[in-house]
Image (cartoon, rainbow, N blue to C red; front, side, top):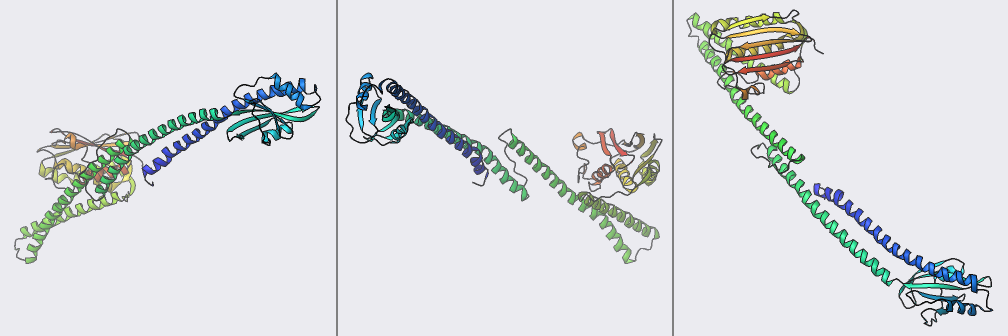
Length: 464
């Protein structure tokens, strides 16, 4: 009873049943009181007419109470279901409309109330054990209560009618409760079963198995939850695959420079190199691959800082033109070697912004480096800067192979590499995007296959 089904039964089945039973009890008492009140009103009217007539016209005509009672008895015909009795103030039944002789003394509540000059009322057993209703009123003789007139009727037929209505209402209530229980059971199963399935599959996900999916059976909130969990599992599976690819890729990326460094180090340690040019070549390779390793490690450290939300900016005044000139010089030699022309076009009057110089330099180097990696022979990389209002924009456009529409949404994701044959960790654009967002800006990519790619970096002039 502690689960959803138990709470559902407590809150949405038991409460309506209790309310229904309360209404049923109220209805039973209402029907019973209604019929009893009708009978009581009828008896009261009958006995009131007789008592009023006697007290007004007959109580002073005779010398004895019994003689005046005889006159009353002769005036009224009493041949229906209601029995009329006249009882003296000693409890002796003087006359009955049924003609039966009653020897027992009357001492019921109605009789005592009538002797006290009130309208008496009694419901209970009669002398013969039958359930009856009695209404009594006092009779006066010579200005004192000398007897009581009583109207008596059986409650057998009334109780039969009340019992009939009670049985019908109970049957209707049982049918309603049965329908409620059946519908509640069906409804609770429609909730509990999918939730149990969600719980079962979620445990598989918790154990690292993301292969199974939850069947969607209803287009409601549970259906939306099912879609969300299935989507989550798909995305986690993709991330797991990307991480596995990343581990494989980064292992390869680390192994390649380490192999070169190790090979040339062993060669240098032998001391057999007599050729100075060959010695310089080995040292240059060691230096280049060491820097490459340093760059990979820095990317991994930045990724770790981003995941911990611990990437800090050292904000200062930056001249964008000077920053772009410095980055252009870094790629100058490479552009000559690879035959790719770098063009800088400045359309900004006020190139100064607030930001982290080294982090923005890292972003620009990463984007331009991608422009080199995916460019064509004798291609170009155009860099253009303009500024409007509180923002400046840097456009970096290349004449490369472009990016598929399916891949363009993924290139900023962690670990994603569009081409596994290209060197890199798959973290560069993801880290660059995070750095730009920390500067209150955005990094957007536009691309068409075989027509090149354009990266738009939008930066705030002043950080909050």
